[in-house]
Length: 70
Image (cartoon, rainbow, N blue to C red; front, side, top):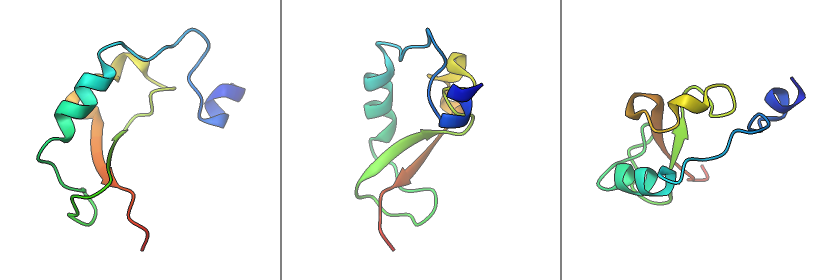
């Protein structure tokens, strides 16, 4: 339970070797879901990876956000 509270992946859960390609491909041509910006974009899981590692590569479980400082 401590890992979940700390926001870390549970023991034994590792990122898929396909994650980087999935992330980079998904971000192409996208904009931030909050502000519409297109700079410093990151891909976040809606249901966090540490809670549902099986949804890591599910396009319905990700959202594009930027790192804008407002």
